[in-house]
Amino acid sequence: MRANRYLGHDFRFLLGLARNRVVMLLSFAFVGAALFFHSCGKKETKGSDGSDSVVSTGGWIKIDSGTTESLNDISFRNSNRVYVVGNSGTFLVSDDGGNTWKKHETFSSEADLTVISWVNEVVYVAGQDSVFVSKDGGNSFQDIGEAVEGRILDMTYNTGAFWAVGEKGIVWKGTIDGDLESFDPLKTKWEKVDLGIIADLNGLSFSFSRGLIVGDGGTVLETTDGGKTFENVGKTTDDLKTIDSDVFAGPQSLFYYGGIDGAPAYAVKWITRKNSAYPNFVDIDCIVDCLALGESGDGSTILLISDLNPADSNKKGGEILETLVKGVKPQLNALAAHKKIAVGKKGLIVRAAE
Image 1: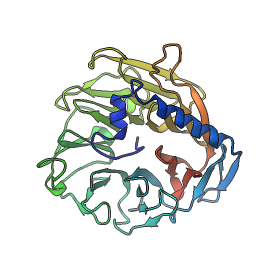
Image 2 (image 1 turned 60 degrees about the horizontal axis):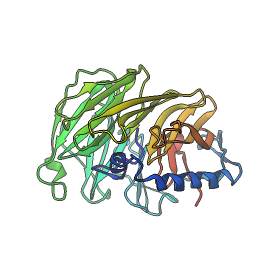
Image 3 (image 1 turned 90 degrees about the vertical axis):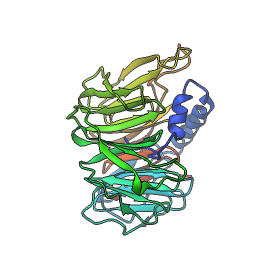
Image 4 (image 1 turned 180 degrees about the horizontal axis):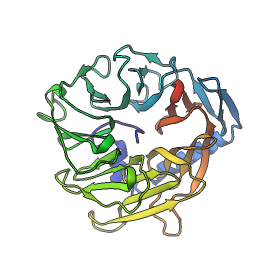
């Protein structure tokens, strides 16, 4: 759901547009990194609740977060500055790429924070019935002052408006006043969008006029006009918990709904991959291949999975290339592929060793 939650036509979405193999070299680098971690052997750590937390494909280590609260989302502002949000108003900041963390006493302990997003110098944090905004890179926050209702689970920006989705079908649209470089986030006009959906909406992605919202019960809402209208194009009944560009995931299943190589921009195809070796996915982050986080009976797993829509017609997408992390307890909730860090319950943070 919440891999690199930075807003705008960001790195992930631009690569989503270019995923028809312009960035294949990045895939090779990604696989090479995975093989390096695999060669390091096995490392065991202790979970923050005292239970064994096994990071099985060595090179992954546990980082002291300084909290035992559940951590729900992580986002890189740049290669050094990283944000994490969690329950009871938890807001963590790292200025060394995630090696050390400082807790900022910014939010009320009654606020369970679920998602963090940013665009330029503006940082958004959202949770239950609330959206907070920072105009100084996350040093201070203000309530946006709008009656945003419901538990927000994902946010993004697209062409003049912010979008937020969450539990029980809630969709909010915040139209900015002015251009993206100079707008005042406290003057953004928020309005509720009724799509007639009651299922939880867990993730969304936009790329110019096209966007997707995914949720429980196989909900896949597509817009091709920048959010003026949406159509439910779902072909599954699985609860879809996470999306990155045109790839989304649920219990032991991955899906691709996006462009066809060599076809007009409006042409799309649907690809389904089900595999008993897959966990129940909760977060995914794709460049060409995908880093995917899921939960199974023996704990959390992070997999490197091949591109679901490979350029080579002789290759089958969705193959497990490497098991990077396995059997991690307590449960991991979100990951950031940029520096290979994941956060979870009981204040747990694990990352690939540098």
